[in-house]
Length: 358
Ligand code: ADP
Ligand code: MG
Image 1 (cartoon, rainbow, N blue to C red):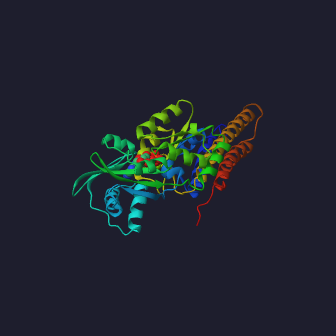
Image 2: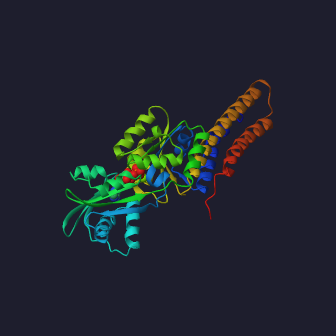
Image 3: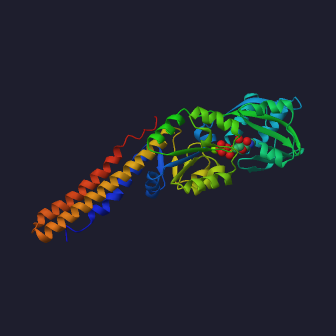
């Protein structure tokens, strides 16, 4: 009976999982549960959001086109609208406006459409800011040469308009995170067979960032609305286990749809965090690859533990039944096996997932 009691089998899984969760947490990767860690070990497809995930949250306004020539008035209206948005683009526009000493106009009743733009009311009436989807929705024309010049660049373009009239646009540039290239390479080394970047931004911008990250054009999907991301994650999920990494409100549904949703914790939105199974507290994307490697190592250690624990039990029971195994030896074998699988699991505690920088 002592030899057959399954202590080692029962303890082998939680010992490894808890050690891995704890090592990951110390490295700034918070798993919401052991299930997410076990699923992550099986993930071989990674889908990434672009803005704020593979790129830094700190975008910069690189050009301003005010069609009536009044840049300050234009920026004031745009910043008034974007004052109500938590998008990285909005923050960039607000920073630029403040740097020029321009006061943001008062805009009320603001509603945002994820991956499209934002609308509100100022003293003169309804006002909108967003991308070409919103321009089309407002039946506005953007064939002005100054606007075309912005479109020809590889930067994100935000148009500001009132009804069908476009007042102007700004170009905003974001940059790939320094850690993104290394993280993608490390994931491929871990055996991830497919990496995809999905963005609501325009294709030229997506291609520029993708090239910096070493992604092939077929690994880049641009102009995606939130529901497109969900659909693509679903299509990927039909071919393997998918992790989606995102930061925005527009990513929440895809985060929920993926086998493992991973949200950028520090700079990401609340909704994304809620929908995700894992939060990355650090801006260092390499931690993500580390966490994936750690999850795979945990799953190997669990398999070792289970094989050892079951093997030891079979040997001890056979010894007890057929070889007159003395009770003290059965106890030592049983307790010893339990201690060994726990120690094996505890090895994960010292896994060198990168420590947060002090
Ligand atoms: P990503 O999927 O790369 O994170 P988003 O889906 O968040 O990008 O944004 C996609 C596009 O939607 C932006 O490039 C921008 O054109 C438009 N957009 C989103 N939010 C806003 C906003 N607050 N103001 C203006 N444009 C916005
Ligand atoms: Mg984003």
